[in-house]
Length: 438
Image 1 (cartoon, one colour):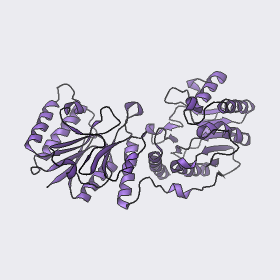
Image 2: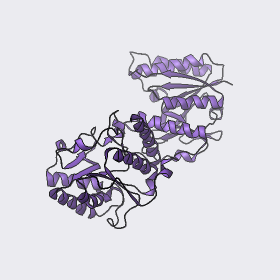
Image 3: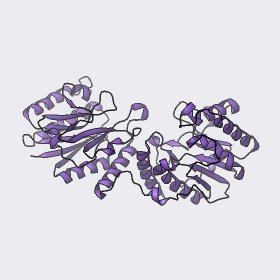
Image 4: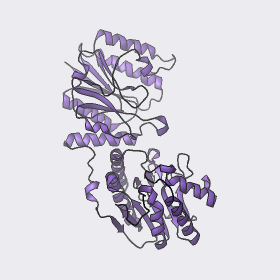
């Protein structure tokens, strides 16, 4: 029986397309693709999708299977589709994690008269000039395989999002993952989609486990290192073994940047025994700054989920005419404390002491966002003690740029709100791109 995979992509997703082609070749299936890149109208895209489905079904043998996959569907394991579609005219699949779980990123259609008639009806519903059609609503009368549902021993699909732990790696009988994210978090950035697909493709072709990255073994394991000591400007970062997957990538990246421009880099890989009792993670930021600022003209904290992307740019111009270095936060805080720098001056040293005192006094420092996090305390002190306003911070394109706002000349990218294994994959991809910039 003929089976054809049809990639229907609304955006350019080269690594996902490679994934689909590789899967089809491995399974002995046919492959074709439809591109909607540059087609902004949702009505036109939906009409093109169902016209394309009809186009292919009419050219395939009766009872053949047409597997439709968008750029948000990645094949995880090389498993056949036939058991999933056994005894079915169609196989639509629900996932957990978004609304009622119905998704349209992966579908299986059997080439029968009934299915072709259904597709013709869908085309009629999608006609330009009618009220805009919602695809999930249009297919509401059809049954779906339940979330995590298995058919013929194969689990059809699972949800995958940047903020969700990749539990899907635990299921060798899982066929696909479907990418999805809420609008408030920017949906699925292209950099996430392509980095994850590239990593999955590489592991499939090499036959190695997912999320095993070379930086984890290439960086030192000592509790502390200092690179390029005694310079005017010093950067400080800190990560613990549980986040070494991405912390090691950040360390390699920061070391490269500091050696290029003549900056000192302090790297802590364990929580210092002499640090603030009960504090870990970013709660130790004021302690580190207080320790190192007296020995440099500037001490700049950098979270371990940040990369210097365009390393041709020195930090010095951004320090001119200011005593505190901080950029806007995209959320409710006046600053994002992932990058926080101070010039060595008596008044500034006293302010860093005050930050340390307030952060150390927080009753709960057990997690990043306990009591609103250290960022809340620091932002409030800046506002209350120094009269800091939004105008005093750097824009978040100059430094500390959220990774999904990435530009070609971004100096620093902050990979916030991603689960550790996938954060490491995205950071590794961006580190490769950074090296290629020169």
